Image (cartoon, rainbow, N blue to C red; front, side):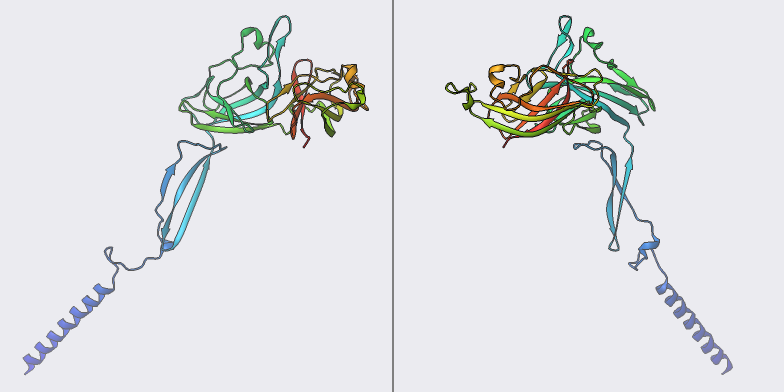
Length: 348
């Protein structure tokens, strides 16, 4: 009897041990089970896409880490890195000619201007260096949607009429910078964009050139447009009215021109103003303010030539003959054919 009882007790203990081991196995976590895991304590996997070709203008190269959904939690990481090569537009001006009459001189085709850019270029992170060539910059005319992808080729005799022209090609070593001027012949506009591109024409840096009605950084000359009037003819010349030719109208601008910073005075004559119709592209390189038969029909013409002293101004009317348009662009130029002020004229 004693042996049977001991056997029964021993058998019961064995069964209890087996049950305990089974329960422990069921409640432990295993890598093959589908038991929920606290996502906040687990590393979130990431999938990184490097943008190698930028098709839109950007001032930074952007590395995007795609969002990954884990337990309904989305993590978005955006990391910006510095441009490998950067550019800075230090100043910009527009000229209608370069050189000296009778010696060596060049001018753009009608309706175009020379865009002179003073730029700095820095190699931030290109270990092999960046080779700056004639095809490294592209200038976009944002108003017309046109692009000029090569600078104007300057003859050696014309280079001296720029203060610090680049000599290309030029290699910019890592962490080095260069500065100089480069000239493009472009359609006249107030808004440009300069793109720096690599050998594969990928944009690696982009900068705006926005003049906002002012074509120099020094603001030497100010223009105020008080009114604009279009007339088909001058009836005051009766019995023989005067009419423009070619279906054009007389455009009379009532303006104030102020000399803000030209110490020697601004010599204002009939070739100091250029008017353009952006719609038709019609272009007139002078006013009629030197023609007495024309100015006698104006109430208060500015009689030319006249010298406007520094900090002085003149107010009066300027006369042109233009196609009818709702908008014109008026440019003032100095004796070096540099556009030193500009205004959009609303005549609609």
